[in-house]
Structure formats: C-alpha cells, structure tokens
Length: 259
Image (cartoon, rainbow, N blue to C red; front, side, top):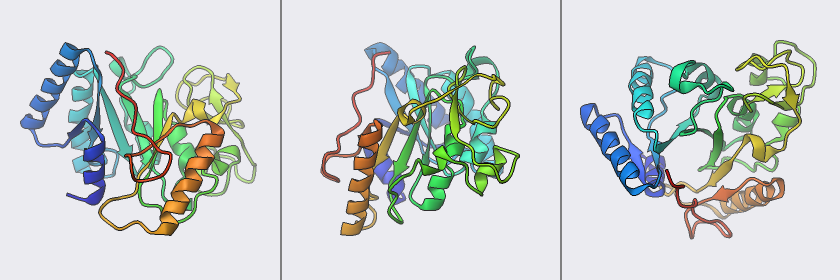
C-alpha cells in the first residue's frame, strides 16, 4: 500500500477500495451502521475514479450507484484530474438538485503540492459540489498564495474554461449553483445561470488537509512551508485540519454530523 493510501486510511473512518461484490457489501454494512447509530461517516475512496482510461470508467459506473444507495455516508473523492471530473459526474436524477448542485454527501477534492497544481485550482472550484477540499500531502515548493490564480486568469489550463485569450478575468460565484465561474463568461457552465456574485474563498473551498506523507521523512523546509500555508488559510477563513502531532496548531477533522 502506498504512503498516501496509508495516510488517508488512518485519517478516515472508512476507506473504500474496488474489490467487487465484497466492497459493495461492505458499503451496505457501513450505511446500515450509520443509519442505526444516527451518525454520518466519511468514506475515503482510494484510487482516482476521474483518471483517464477504461478501468476508471468502470469504477465510476459502479461507484455512482453505491453513493446513491448510501445517503448517510459522506464520500470523499480525491482527484489529480479536476479538468476531467466536472463532466464525468451524472447530470440528472439523484446527482443534481434543483440548483444544479451535486449531492451533499459527495465531497470533491484535489491535491495541491506545486505551483502547477495551484494553477489548476479554478478547475476544482468550477465543479458544482456543495463541499470542496484541498490536500497538501507532499509539498514540492512553497505555496504562499494558492488562490492567486483564482483572482486573475492566467495563461494555461484555465483557457479550457474561458475561450477568450489575452483578457484577465476574476472568478465569481454562481448565485444559483455556487460553483466558480469567470466574470467574462456569459453564463455558468453548470446551470447556465447569468447571475454571478462576488465571493470569499471560504464560500468555494470548505476545508484544507495539510498532512505530510508518512512514507518519507519530512524535512524542516517542508514543515515551514506547511506552517506558512496554515497561516495563509487562517487569514482567508478556510479551516485547516491534520493528524495531531504532525504540525503545530492543527487539529483533527471534527466529528461527523448526525444523519
């Protein structure tokens, strides 16, 4: 098992792996337990179901039904491909509320360990999830201002979201579905609403996990970078969490809410 998988398995109540019928039966047992105890439980889905390829496609098809059948479990889907994730969710039935948002028990997140990763943050914010999160687990460099690429459009992957070149854009928040949309876009790409609002970071990103990968020794520089991130998120009002003892001033995720 990889170091990242071990780290998340320690952190969450449940870890889901794709193992055929046995995995589906396990999810059903977790759902029954959550319903019986009246306490929601978080399930970390190991593996990136949004990655390219046939295997991920088959995993998504089975996972969507499991999520529908377990409304008392909160599913954490972590991806390295936010540019693909938005279009790979189902678009009807259980998967869209009247405002075009994904179900409340689906949390979508991405890893952000480099400057290149931070440039892709607008792609995560454009997904119409009710809760989004970031994970910093193996920092490659100092990330002093991860939201810099949200306040202005830069050359690169953001051009996939906006078809005009050479114009600086600021990300707004769609009034209807709550997802991020550039201010120069005529409508929201998710719900097609024309109403946009100014926003603060905590309205689009709901929490951050800062945890050093236990599979490799963390350097003092990495710890300093992590502490800088902690200070930054504190200033803009986004909660940060980690396992106790890894970094100063960080706490575990709070207990799950009642069903």
